[in-house]
Length: 334
Image 1: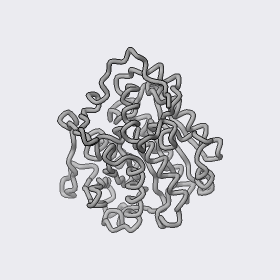
Image 2: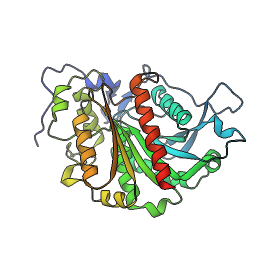
Image 3: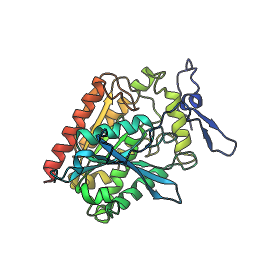
Image 4: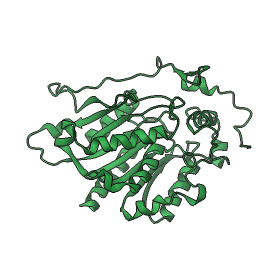
């Protein structure tokens, strides 16, 4: 089984780049010392907070959990509207990071305040200890957990008829595949209704290198060798990059997109011209559109598959696109 490889001039160590060390048992040692994290801030009496957050367990056997974000304005007695819900999946190549990573915590806080919306950010199982589809399974499990509204914030403040799946990089991959699963069992998730997918720099590839992968093979943020390692460690053993988890265009795309279309769900794809995966993201967008699904896109200059800087022009443009997408999808749903 031959694959096209990263250009030979690459000298980047993908393990070092990801701050991971492989162990003889096939697991990883993750060095989190250079990865700042943020604790949840649930205290409603701390009036410096625009957004409250708290951590809740989902499946204690699998050590999965979620961080829930609630905009403070929802606590105001004069605020009577229930809020859209965004289920968020963090990036990290399926291998590293969590909802507590500062970049992703800050993203969720910003979106919760700006939209406003309640956000549930999932701490899913990581590869290679738990290869795909473990992350997809965890994502479906959190949807079923959410629909029971056992958590007070969800019960009191969420409009379950206006829900969205959103992810960055590998989280965008999760959002896409879970969106397909939702289409297959939509009745089992009621009263939860998924109105759209928000795919930020979604992490997809294929055996055949694209022009953008070759042109940006040594991109400092997401070098191609790091992408290859992430797929090697996260795909089912023996699978290559033309597995459907990695290459959603295989076989003309999933037949579940037809059901997705019938549900009236929409898709927003966000990318940047400095992301090595942009060619694949554009192909994905075109394929979804050809299936008759309503799509929107925001492809800007720069950008990559990690948490953007909160005060950057790129982040503000992405934030505006997402807000427009959520509000327009909610209006259509009404």
